[in-house]
Length: 220
Image (cartoon, rainbow, N blue to C red; front, side, top):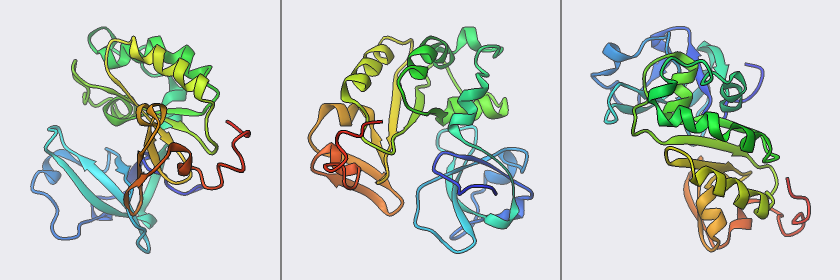
């Protein structure tokens, strides 16, 4: 692979045997997953030669945390690459899926927000694979790459735009420390940060960027 795998990346494996479980593979997996479908990189402490991944079945209860051999990857697709393809524009289910309609309506605002953005969750999976994973009740999950603290005013403007869309939009800021919900960051006070070693509760939002007090003016 040309770059390290990051949380929410979609990975294609060259064989089913590339998947490893801590105990046993779930019963549903052989019926609903095959190497033609990707797995999703998840946050977990590193293991030599293995990548932490999640595998999804057709039901919400069919989710499994597994490991994939790093030597048996044949393709990777990042959330921002999914977004760049703009597959929702000609999607055959656009008229029936609020999440795809929300993407259509939010695209200009996301492009103007000043950050690299991507699509995750069910919408990202369906756009990348063509598998019907979205429903009319599905949220839209988005990711914003934030190597530095974003400008609060710009994020408030984006949040206001997303609030008026046809479905709920869940935005995660990908900070150097981990993933932070945009809604929590804008609210201020303590924030929950999703890290590879587990959730971390920080007393104030800027703590998600190490050294942020020194770099407060270097806003992305």
